[in-house]
Length: 344
Image (tube, rainbow, N blue to C red; front, side, top):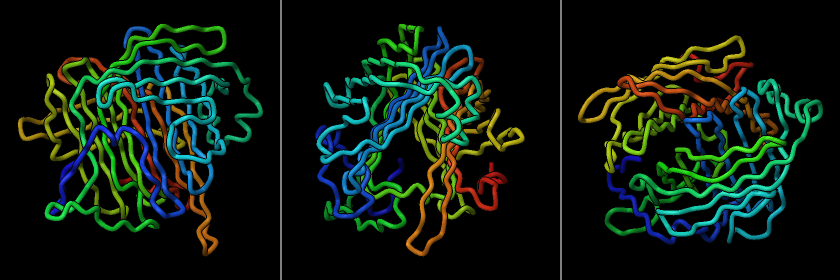
């Protein structure tokens, strides 16, 4: 996250814990983790978003099994406080800020032979089996922190936020290693993997961004990337992210992504050209398993808005090295098509 003119980013250990909600109806504080075990091929991502002013949390749990099946669960459990991330059977704990965190889940997953069925979630949850799932993962930071809370460089005051047009006011990320266990039905996986986590807070509508492409990927503890391409208006796109070499991040200055699509306009592969001040990387991604998700909202004027987020477990190659991560594509859907289709 690059600093804007007149703005600096600050990040304190206390930001790892939850904040006092802003007085806007759509305040969201969320934390997200992903992991892929490069040896077994099992992967997953886990998110809690507290929308306490609306009285509920968004809980998502997704596990990619090595045979291509996906276990998925989404719930909106009721909450009364933003003091903790603990809802719908999922809990996140900060054991040491910026260093050690823990992810746990105890609940069910909808087990999908064809993850694409989640495009129609009601039917998918009705026609596919539900199996018990237990997750207990300890995360360890392997990189510096990236991002923070924007403040005025001169006064230290937070800039004003337009709640209706906001996706978040503060955001940070970190590459991680994770160890622990994932149990899905009668399958148990001892996990020793790599991934990324992020946290954000502030007013959020999923429709505040026209489209984005987000590629969190890890080759090993000394070489990783988080690549982003974001368009708020559907026309112009902003490049961002970092390349991790050793224990140092190098800011990404420019990103282009050439995507291969299937008949449903889901990404099946990609080639990302990523430029830092030091060099340009060509990163090739092969999507091995993908689940489509959606968010719907009706505006005060009665307009129906539909956001699609496709979450692809992706095998990446760069400089002859093989890594794993996610390709997360968000698009507003207009006239049945993703608005970012022609841009990437």
